[in-house]
Length: 236
Image: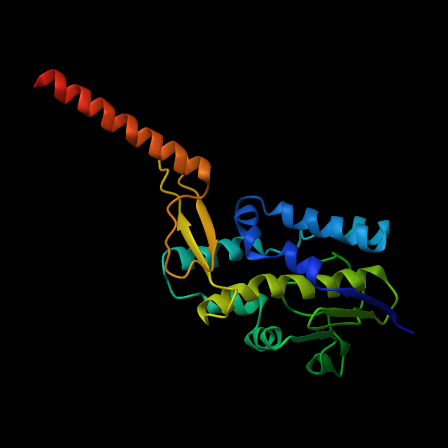
């Protein structure tokens, strides 16, 4: 008999929202921390929260690479992108009905069931024979664990979260409403020069990653102009 978990997607969607990409670009551990906090708060299950980890899911370097493709207006590396969010899953997410299960029909052969050979394969670092399903229909999510083991839930949960995180890169290139992510470098070159993300600016190109950087640059430039004016007066 399967263990069934039902929950809303919106709290997860807030965690993986592009508005948090600035944080995850520089502090990838924050993604794991926020998801772990959500799991603990949602089910009050210490076993799930303690086991949950993204340590063996090597998502961050690929996330940075795709971000920099947007920054420099390069073609997206779809070999990397499809590793985390296949085009069929992109289509399902756009349609509002995402489904992923293990085993998939094509993983059954004469030797029995194999662990999935995909980026999530070592997510919990065990040799457990997985058997699970995760399905999102609009804001409703159901995870079914057919072996009644918390490792299966974690595996399914990661297979929900990470494809939705990388979905944004597909959506940006395809100009999906509310997912137009732009990537820039801060013009505060002296103190910052950080990569930062802007959402749905629609032609307005931001120059600074924060008000602090804007104020610093404007103040510095004003002082330079004032010093030049004073120097010009003395030499006149």
